[in-house]
Image 1: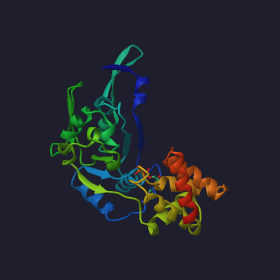
Image 2: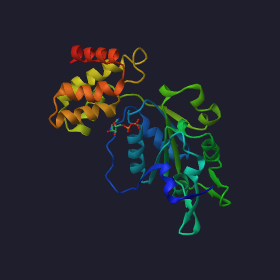
Image 3: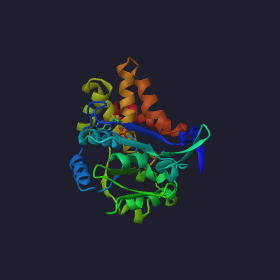
Image 4: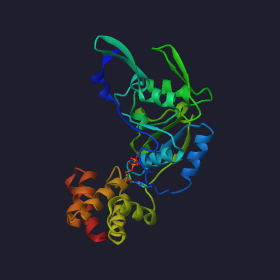
Length: 277
Ligand code: ADP
């Protein structure tokens, strides 16, 4: 299909080039950095499993910078097609020109390509991923007739959140068994406190009760709540407090309201906050 340039907005993509910034701060929670390096050195694709806001994207940014590779990050959504990743012909001032998508650019440049929430994408995406994730490491571009061989620097990383899975959106075994996999979860309190303090600038002793509250709220997951408080939300909360907002207000805005729309559950969460702090 030929599209005008404007329709490419369907792809939310960011590109980080090595050296463009210092190493993004990442506090390891286990041996995930070593595993990533092994996967990269052996040209194996990697699947990151875990809840939203627990550090997966930051981890990939950190590792890409550490390995000196450019990084293409694509947030997948239910309208994302294979052509959004590989590329398409576009109309440019009366001419038809081929425009590489982010996956194709990553393969050509030997970059790391990170597909966040890959199960959200349309089914045809798996068709382009399969030949890239076995020992062929190729990307056939039917539209241009090219077959690209991925250079050693190319690595495919995908993530998904098992908590959101339903039968329709599960990763098929034939796809997931092509990836090494590593499970992510929220960091233990002794690790999460320095992460939140570093990211927000709030002193560690003021972050400690917030992390305690987050863990009390996380314990309710599965009972009243679908998802627990993410590290991302904790950082938002600490950032608000650091800029002068009253803790009670910041907690409500960052740790309570985003979790539920149900007034009874909200009242319950506020009670948890009162007794925990
Ligand atoms: P995910 O990709 O899992 O949804 P992110 O990587 O975007 O989550 O994490 C959300 C935020 O939490 C990051 O921007 C970062 O500020 C912080 N964060 C979470 N875990 C870590 C960690 N281990 N080290 C450093 N920052 C972290």
